[in-house]
Every structure is written in C-alpha cells, then in structure tokens.
Length: 305
Image 1: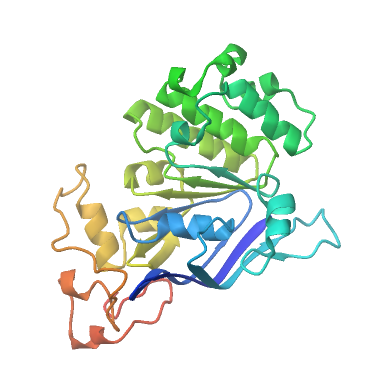
Image 2: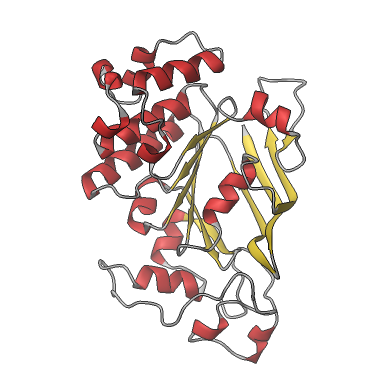
C-alpha cells in the first residue's frame, strides 16, 4: 500500500481569519519505509495526519489529493483519494483497515471506565477480526493480564502498547503515529521507535509525526521537515542528518543538546498571517531580498540551499 500526497492543503476558517495549517504538501510513502515528519510545535504536522483520515472539524477546508494505492496483490482495486472519499468509505474501508492511527498521548484517548481488554475486543469485533485480544496484546508487547487494567492503572509504556495494539487490530498496511513519544522517558522512547521500525520490517509503511529528532534518526528512512505549514525539505534520513540543506533544518539539528545546542532565534510566524515569500526569512542567517518570493520546492524549498 503506497501513499501519494499531492498538493494537500488545509485551511481553518475562523471569525475574521483563516488559519493556513498545511500548504501544498507533496510526498510519497512506500511499503517497508518510515517517513518522519518533523518540525516545531504548531507547524501543521498533526493536522496533516488528521486530514488523511478525515478527522478534521467542520470549519476545515481540505484541497489537493492523497492517494492510497492498493498493493499489487489486490488487482482490480482502485486507488482511494483520501481527500475526496466520502465519510462512509473512510469509516468502512480506510480507518483501522488500511490506515492504523497511533494517537498522541494514548492514555488520554482510552475510555477511562472500560478496561483495555474491553476496548481491544470491541475494536477487533468492529473490524471483523477473528484474532483474540490476548494474541493481539502479545503482538504489541503486552502480557495478556495487562489488558485487564483500566487506563489509569497503565504505565506510560503500557498505554503506548495498548495504542499500538488498537492500531494493529485491523492489520493495516499503513500506520500513522502522531507524536508517539510524547511524555515518555528515553528508554520508552527508544522502545517505541524500535516497535515502529519492526512494523516497517514487516513491509508496512509508517508515517511518524514528531518533534524529537533523536527519535526520528533511530527509525526513519526519509525525513520531511515542516515549517509554518509547508514542507521545506524532503530527503533520505542518512544524508539529512549529516548535511541538511534548508537553513531551518540545519537550525533544528544545531539546537540538539548532542550537537551545538544553539536555538533558532525568533519565533515562527502566525499561521493566520503568513508572508508571501519564504516564511523562515525573518529568522534565517542567509536571507536576501530574493527570499521575498516563495522558493520552488525541489527537494528543498530555499533560494540558498
């Protein structure tokens, strides 16, 4: 199952303003590969994931395309445009079956008055899967009796594994992991990233949304850097971490404690008032008058890459 995002844009209409949450996003994600979407908080990463699943509020306008191409074994099955697909198709064919979502802060997404077992069993039943909750728990790294706990009784690592189990219940070929390491300590972060890497090794496609560059480096085959609603650099992971091309990407890496530990000066622009040219220009050490015009995206969106 391949995902092809082509010109995806998301706008939120507010009284007296329009939020430009995602602008002209373009990328591909193939089976067996992990794409990490990275950037500062508020740049539009999570909005992108929710747009792919049709989970945005009513004031959102989504344009462009996001094609799910069927695997070669599914001859005769048409590609699904996630942007144009009606809610019935997304609910009955896509969510849980073709795309599994690992949400941010998984404990907060579990029903507090029901055990993990009850929620896993319900998901399996709704997806028409014959697998037992215990078998699914073991696949996700849980002991069967862990499922008999309520969400408030789960540790951060257990809640994360329950979320993984729910995402895998329908055996989807594509996994969206939205900030899967939020609130976890470093050993749990490493364990979560290792689990996502294992899913890639099973020939699934994985999209990881994160601001944790160290975690992204552990798992990703490809990196997409997002700034102020736009993807500004798209590259394979190995050359990206050794030599990023966009000044913003370089700034993100230089801010890591394991590197120069130098923060990027200034703040991102408001998504309701984006400039006509390069949005990073006010913070960029390489800025010139040429940056008053929006750079063309060709692997990197920068006049000085």
